[in-house]
Length: 85
Image (cartoon, rainbow, N blue to C red; front, side, top):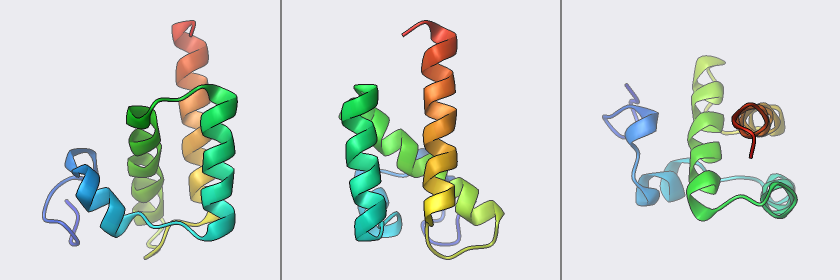
């Protein structure tokens, strides 16, 4: 459970994500480019941020860093590849 929101990261609302999953400018650009390249929806965007937040939490980090974001993107890409999309 997240100390920030009182709920699991998977249950965060879009507003929670907006407040607790802020990215540095370069990371935001990376995510924006990945959205276009991978053809992700807004739903996919928020899922990636939730996963990146969880990875950061596991590593004890207070903010999402580039390595957390790229790992989350890698999981998303793998998920899409395995499902044939």
